[in-house]
Image (cartoon, rainbow, N blue to C red; front, side, top):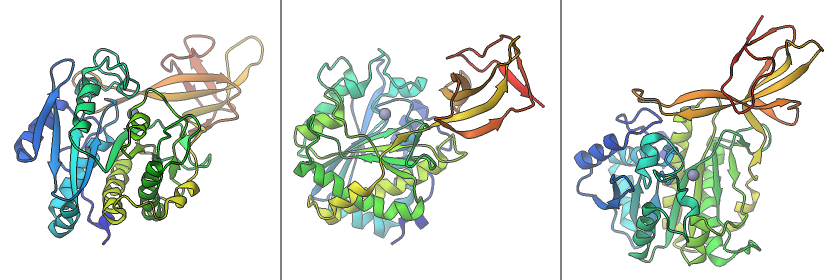
Length: 369
Ligand SMILES: [Zn+2]
C-alpha cells in the first residue's frame, strides 16, 4: 500500500499559517466525536486532544508546542483527510493503534506565530520549571495512560542540510536520556521506528532526511519523557527547495507520520532494525536563505564582500499567511556558507541608504545592473 499515492491535503487549511479560531471551529464541526478540551492556554484559549482508534498500542503526539511550527498540525489534518478517503487503510491502522493527538499545544504562540507562549516561555525548555500552563497540560495528558510511544512534533529552520547540498526536509531524533548519550532500550525502540520511516521516505526524498543532534538537553521535553520511560520520537519538518510555505514539507511530514504509526503496529515495541538509524546523516548547519556575493560597497576605499540574508517569518495584521522579511545575518567573508539563492553582484551597483549594510536589520539595499 502506497500511502504517498493516496495523500490529499486538507483543503480547508491551504496556508502555512493556521488561525487557532479556524482550527477550533473545524475540530468542533468535523471531529466533535473525537475531541475533548484538556485545558486552556495562558490567554484562555482551549487546547484540544483528539482520540482516534481502539488498538492496544497507545500513542500520544502533540503539535505546535512552538507556535511558529504548523507542519505537524497540518500533517494530522492531512492524515485524517487522506484516511477518510481510504477507510480500509484507516481501519487497519486504528484497529492496532489508539492515538491521542494534542492539536496546537501553544495556541497563543500559534496565533502570533511565535516560538514562545504568551508569557515568553519556551515550552520545550520548561519541563522542570513548569512556568507555563501549557507544559503542565502536556505532562498531565501523558500521565493518564501508559503510552508505548510519543511523538514530539516540531519544525526546523532552513539553515540545515543533510550533506551541505540537500535541505534537511525532515529530521528525526531518538533523544538521549543522559549526557553520555547511551543507546538504551527505549532509544532503540524510537530508532527502530525512525529507521522504518527512513527506509520508506528516502525513496521519495533522497538525501533530504537528517538526524538531529542527540546532545542531551536536561530541560527539554523529549529527553525528559524518554528518561522517565516513554519512548519519545522527535520529528522536525524543514526546508524544501523553493517551498517557503512548506507545502511540500507538509506532504512528506504527513507521509512520515503515517509510516511511523504503521511501523509501531509492526514493531509493537520491538527494536528490530534499529541500527539503520545510525546510517541517517546528521544535520549540518550550512545555509542561509540568500547570499549576495562580491558586493562592491560605496566606500572611498575598495570594499568587496558577501552579504548573508535570512528570512524572518512574521504574522502581519490582516493577512492570513506568513510574511517573509529578509534580514541581514552576516557581512564580510561568508565563503564557508552557501545560499539557497546565490546572487553574484560582480559589476553591479549597491544602492543603500547607509554605507554598510546593517547587521540584524531588515535588508535596506537593492542591487542594480
Ligand atoms: Zn520546535
